[in-house]
Image 1 (cartoon, one colour):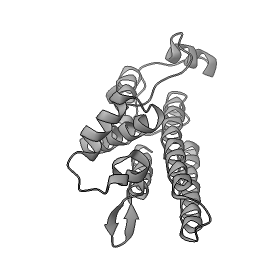
Image 2 (cartoon, helix red, strand yellow):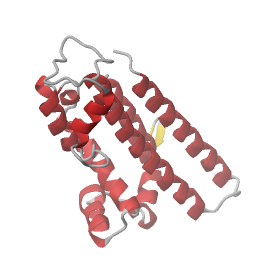
Image 3 (spheres, rainbow, N blue to C red):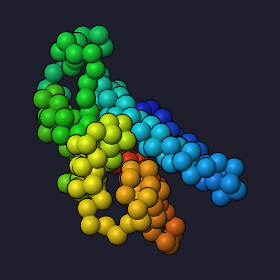
Image 4 (tube, rainbow, N blue to C red):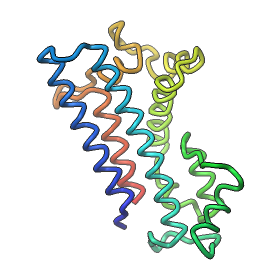
Length: 199
């Protein structure tokens, strides 16, 4: 089921990775410093994660408004208008939390029989999202707790250089040699794959 939110999100991920590659080229020519490149990695990763959240919200609303149809999707409620739907979903809050992903799943099960398509993600997918959210928290909220959680659940016992034990260095660190990929690229590819799974 094609969805405009998915198309927009996948294009966004492609643009973010294009920017990352351009910044790596500038760094290799010594046109920017390492600290600048690491800041770019953090900013691009945050944009990718917030883009995924926006995709989840847009897909969810599209399902409830019946703009996305599939034989497996059976709604448990209907609203007369988008405003009424948003009032029901927000329940007085100013915005909805979509991550950690269990919040999306719980909300989906309230409004959609079986929570589909959001229940289609595997435990492995949810574990990847949890890792991505932990990295995001370590970047956006550099508190002792967020850093300790990043160290404990993401870095763990991995053999990394000193600079790779911080979020930006970790994202830039190589994880595959053929094809050569760093962790940022792997996480971006995973977000794209999961978005395609949901549509």
